[in-house]
Image 1 (tube, rainbow, N blue to C red):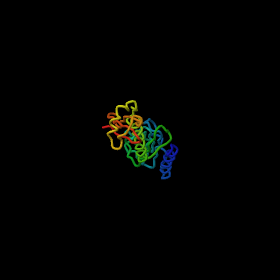
Image 2: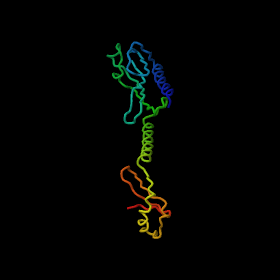
Image 3: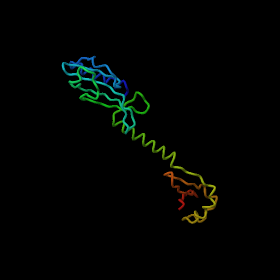
Image 4: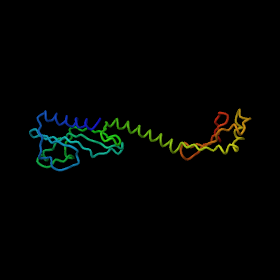
Length: 189
């Protein structure tokens, strides 16, 4: 969903209330509460505010949140500045801005799915980049020839048959040593 789609949804909500007989009430438009856009509508003694707020973040998901709110103004606030936190909320809808794309918004479910994908990618990157270290130790092949000869079907292994000796870590702390000889990989115990 793009920002223009949210603008269309905002306009649709405003138009639907105007179609029900509400008119724009300009006396309550003063003051700034950080909303992106707002419209105050009045129909007889009923006042409605529809506003779009970009000032939110969902810290669990890590995304900026844009919220569309339709709220009824309480009777005691009719002739004063209308505060968004005093509204009786009729309808609310939230969209989550993905990444640094300023014009792409999704629902909460889609944001949760995107977060899972992002976390999985980061975990794969982190594991591959930092933990799945493999260090080549082939220069130490003479020290492991006797170990390889003690393995089943490897009694006649020569130093030239050892193609690789390496250590590998999957958690970044503990290393496991391996020997590759005659197309077999042996774990050093």
